[in-house]
Length: 285
Image 1 (tube, rainbow, N blue to C red):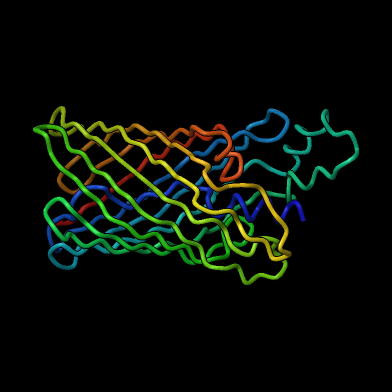
Image 2 (image 1 turned 90 degrees about the vertical axis):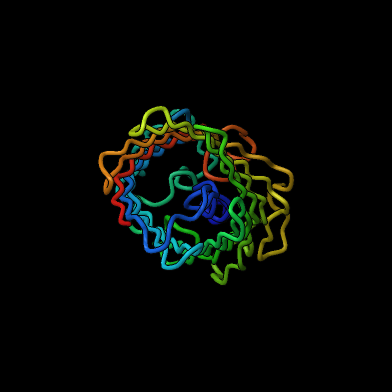
C-alpha cells in the first residue's frame, strides 16, 4: 500500500509544468524537431542519489498563421537499480519495514513515458493561449496512468536585446481507474513560468528562467483515507541555459534545472532535483 501511495503522489509530477515555448508562435509553415538527451538526479534513500538517463523526442509544427501544434514523448533509457537502492538502505534497516517499499521493483526502470500533445494560438502580438494534454500511453512503472490537462495563457515582450516570456496555467488530473492504485485523483496545481533571454551575438542566446508550481488541493484516495497534506505546497524550479545556432537549419540547446522547496519536491518527484538537458534541434522554414 505504501508503494502505491508513494507512486501515486510522485510519478505524475516527475517533471515541472511548462509549454513547449514561452515566446510568440513562429511564422506559418515552419517548425522544428528536437532530440533531447537528459540526466536527472534526485535525493534517494539513505543519503543516496537516484539517477535517471533519458531522451525526449519533441516537435512543433506551425500549419497556419498564429497556430502551433506541439508533441513530446520522453523515454527512460536507464536509472538507478533496485540492488543499488537496497545496498544504500541496508545500514539503516532496523527490520521493521520492507526495504522494497522504497526500492520498488528489481531491475532498471526503462521505456516510453506518457505522450503529450498541445496547441497554442497567438491571440494578440504579445498574448497566446494554450491547451495541452498528457495521455497515459507510457509504461505503468514509470508513468502516470491518468490524463493530465494543462490550460492557460502566455504574455511575452521585448526590451531591445532582451526578450521576456511568461506563462500562467492550471494543471488538472482525471480520476485513476486502476483499482489497485490507492490514489483516486491527484491534486490540482497552478503553474507559473517565466524566461528571459539575451541576444549576445547572433549565434549565442543565453537565458534564465524558472517554474513555480502551487498545489491547490489535497489528493483523493480510493479508501477515503486522509493522505499527506499537499494544499498550499510550493515548488520552485529555476533554470539557466543557452542556445547555439549552428546554421539556419540546425541549433543546439543546453539547459540545467534545479529545485527549491523540499516539502513540495519530496512528494512530487524527489528532493534535491537536478536535471541537465542537451537538445539537438532541426528547423524548417
